[in-house]
Amino acid sequence: MSNELNTIKENLIAELEQRVEDRILERSNASILSKLINKAETISEAISISQLGTTYKATGLYYEKRLEKSGNELSYFKKNEALSFRSSERGVINKLIIGDNYDALQNLLIEYKGRVDVIYIDPPYGKDNLGEFAKTNYDNAISRDNLLSMLYPRLVLAKQLLSKDGIIFCSIDDRNQAFVKLLFDEVFDEKNSAGMMIWQKKQKPSFLSSYFGTIFEYILCYVRDNKYSFPLSVETTTANKKWPINNAGNNSSILTFKKGSVTFNLPDGTIQPQDMSEGNIKTELLDELTIIDGKNANDFRLKGEWRYNQDKINEIVDNKETIYISKIPFRPNHIKDGGEIKKMKNVLSKTSYNCETNEDGTATLESIFGICPFDNPKPVGLIELLTLASTYEKEDAIVLDFFAGSGTTGHSVLKLNAEKGGNRTFILCQMNEKTDSTPKGIAYQVTAPRLKRIMTGEDYNGDKEFDWIKQNSPYGGNLDVYEIEKVANFESISGKTPFDVIDETLYGQNRFSTLKKKVDWVCNNFEITQRKLESDEQWMNRQK
Image 1 (cartoon, one colour):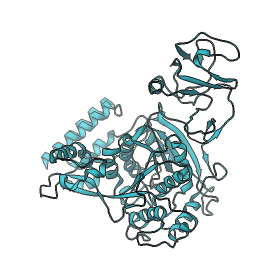
Image 2: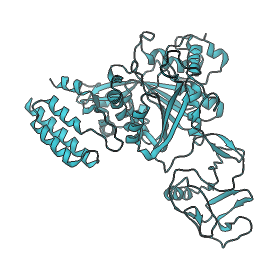
Image 3: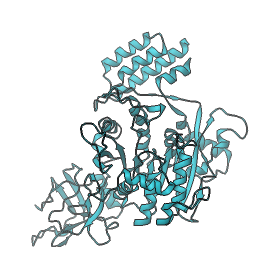
């Protein structure tokens, strides 16, 4: 026990040192905590002392983080052939992953790191819906330790999955919004906050509501890197704009454009860089156009803030793309009539974008299953609106939801493709939680059957008699269903080793031609899937 205790003390002190390097913890405080840890007589005492150094100074957010420890098992995907299906010979393949979303995200990093365009999550923030792993403590109005601890490592993984111009949406209620926003500020950086939307979740408040009726929830919105982000839009306008202003968000004061790389949309026509004029004021041919504080060298004022920084502008020019500058950014691939996009408002309601409510989500599930087997399902129209707004330039976007629930995000992506065109794909992750209404588990009884019904027109059992199909045509498409399996990293029995059971084709790889290549690939990619999340109590019990 003494050797274990000493090893744990060393690890805890190393974590304190890392917090000092990350500027989370003051050096003087770390020194005091290290001395106390060295004097600790038990594992529990050492861990409790180390937790005193978990305060996050950047936002003031404080919570007790769960510890991550290395296990001796690898998690990996195993295809469920019975639930997977093909309804189109060609076309994209969507994915449903059944199991802990922490393991799912780790495995997704092997193939999708930096490739996911949109993430939508609706975490289980109700105190009765979190399960044993993360019950929110509503008796303590200051801290949501378990909810935040559950979300933190998952958001860290999700950030790595996002593309450089990717975006993440998170639905949250009013009681947890402030806490979860601070957590997002920590993980994604406050400068990458794209704002917060207000969503009308119901038409009328509950009669039992205290003080006043609550009919709204919130949707946090963060981009991976604000240098590459783009305004959310579902509408266009053809109105002329006098001043060529770009989207707010980039504080660059000096921008340089190469000759021929810029087109300005103004009321009197198109003005090229070599003819920077308003009216008849001509300039000499310019090799470059330099804009300083919204004003170019020839006193032609370009008022407003700039959408891109210099690095992004150079990248666009190097790719032989034209930069269009107008009051609202112009994207010819999206706007067929030559108009301009119209930035969204941040209120989503029946009167704003005709946005659906939870009642609509319930009605949709009832039309698919005859009953609503899932509490408070998000409506298809809400997530479809968010997906459209963030993928109008990416009709082949990858959309991820790692709290998939009933599968609304997958439904939304399929519906959007059918209505607007495109080949967007979805990846859903869902635990197979068992409830009174779903004794075999949500993933098996709700998520997968819903997708099967709306994609093929029938359930796995052949059932074709449900209301939804009477009003809609099947969306078609293909679905691969994976389950999370575990294998000991030291397993040596032939046929059961990690190199035998892990299927590389489930990770976008062609079948390896030699065992050596397979071994190298597994060793290089699957170490990250050994990480485990544990509460302090669980971890300490395992040590006894």
